[in-house]
Image (cartoon, rainbow, N blue to C red; front, side, top):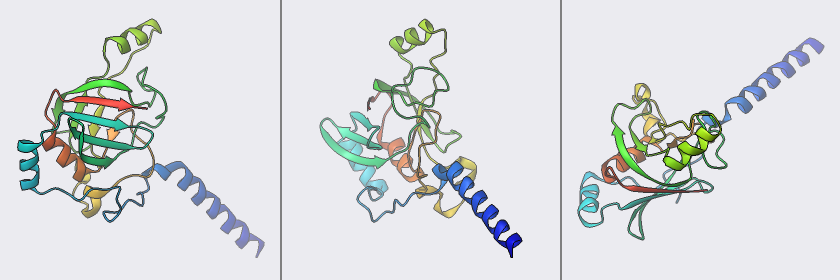
Length: 197
């Protein structure tokens, strides 16, 4: 009996450690019925938005974990998102797990991204580079808005709507793949992005 209880306790401890260690990869409770997730746009709705209310700015609210597409001051789309694994504060160095804060732009895109599709954020700027150089470090780069599921896993039925519970990127902004499809189509290169704490 003691052996059985000891074995059960060990198994429970191992499961607890595994859940704690990998909790950020467990799907969140976000469902399409909640206000947090916008209903998907049709191809026709995307076409109409591009013609009548083109996206002029992206606004990211790190603390709220929200990414907004705006036409001037009007919010057109509002998406849930995840950040770098150490999200508080401005990205200063390569590998710090932080997402930049400030004003940047979308300067190129990658349809063959490791995480579905991606839009590159123009980090680092001259101020970021100077700060990192002053500390004899690299500022890093390749900060993107990208999907949450790697492209080789997109055949899994729920991959388009999968959203991890916690922050997990190396400093990028991750959105659901279904949201990345919309962002990809609605946002042009050279669009301003403002990233708030």
